[in-house]
Length: 68
Image (cartoon, rainbow, N blue to C red):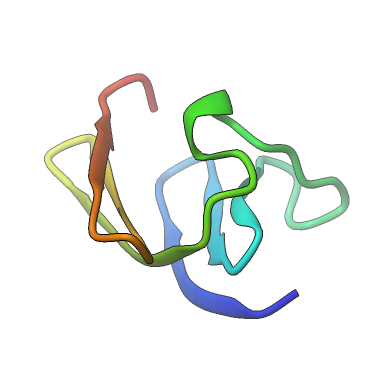
């Protein structure tokens, strides 16, 4: 697994990887795929702004979530 980007919110750490988006709420003890939309897609870049997480994929798609 290659990590391309990491972003932290008040409660969650997100990692953009070549095999999807992963999140942890317990300082990395366990990681989950928070959204099926980005499962297994290469995520290249993350941005957290105004309580929204933005994820850019290798194929040029941009996704956002507001449920953080």
